[in-house]
Image (cartoon, rainbow, N blue to C red; front, side, top):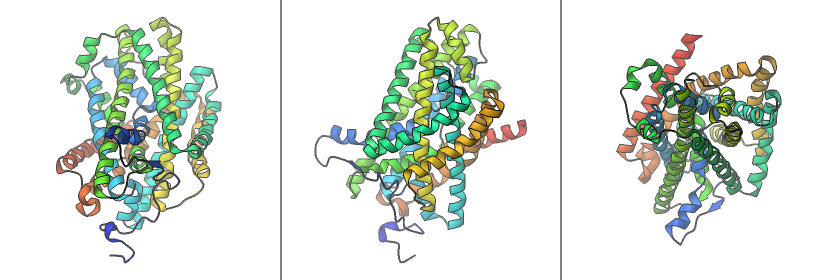
Amino acid sequence: MDASVKDDDRGWRTRSENPPLGEIFRSIRVPVTGSGWRKMVAFVGPGYLVAVGYMDPGNWATSLAGGSKFGYTLLVIALISNIMAIILQSLCARLGIATGRDLAQACRDAFPRPVAWVLWLFAELAIVATDLAEVIGTAIGLNLLLGIPLEIGVVLTALDVFLILWLQNLGFRWIEALIIALLGVITVCFAVQIAMADPVWGDVIKGFAPTTDIVKNPQMLYLALGIIGATVMPHNLYLHSAIVQTRDYGRSVPEKREALKYATIDSTVALMFALLINASILILAAATFHTTGRTEVAELGEAHTLLLPLLGASIAPSLFAIALLCCGLNSTVTATLAGQAVMEGFINFRIAPWARRLITRGVAIIPAAAVTIFYGQSETAKLLILSQVVLSFQLPFAVIPLVMFTASKTKMGELIAPRWLTAAAAVIAAIIVTLNVKLLFDVMTAV
């Protein structure tokens, strides 16, 4: 073992010299004394930044398609997907708290340099693909709400880079507050729309129960696979393992155990919130489109247009557009932070935060702007599909190392994941990888 590796770095090829997201590392104080509620409140935040990735504009189209075509039947798939997400994100929090590394740093410190560089390139492609989907979703939201042309809307999304920088200068808590506030707006928008749609709640409850129809119906199965396959995004795994370390929770094993407990509660509650939003989209589509015979609605713009005549209230389309815009803004914030964690973690390359975020956003804006300028809105759907294919290809390279690291006693010490959790995560990883490989194969053979 390298002489520079300390005792607490056993099992790692190299030692991380810099903390994750150094400018905000351990920047949020955790009360040493006081009630458990006070300590838990201190940990509220990172889970909601992660939850944003599970309700991004790319997920909207899948939920709209599932609800409009098959009613409430696929709600159970949304529930199963959310359980998978909760387990994997808990492992991310465990990795960050136990080792002091985010997933990108852990890959760099555990694997030979050529392997780490390849993983970094894949991760960067995933970040760009994620940001691409968020840029397009935000631009569509601006177009639906304010009538701003897509080409201009795509460029305007670059402005959130400066919003992030300004908020981060005030403190990371301000970024978390922005995310939670926008999630609150999204919740209110969907609550009002669902109240207008007046779904049959008995059928909604039945939708959360497993049914063999999903397996027997090829079209339903394909949409179900799409919902599961698009649930866990690579950037969320890198992001969560980094931002969970914004809390100054101490360095002893008991303090880390306590931090892990509160961080897991935070991410679990936040991801249940994400389930609420995704289920709301599917319920809205089922109650408005499926019941009226419009079973082929999947485009965001089409859904927005149809809400007015179906719900009979002019506010409904506006609420849909507001929710989409808030969702796009939230997703671009978290994707940009994930991009910073990936670059710094994998190759230990640190530049000014504003420069890093402009580079990340610029790489996503250029193809999005080019497509919308030269081909119009019709081709943006193809660009979204391409971004999902890139994410599908990269996902195994993030999930598998995560499960490997957290199952290693040498690397994790006393905070190693319990065997049941490792087994569950391994099964989930195998399912997600298989479904994503199938998605990639289907897209390639369809070309």
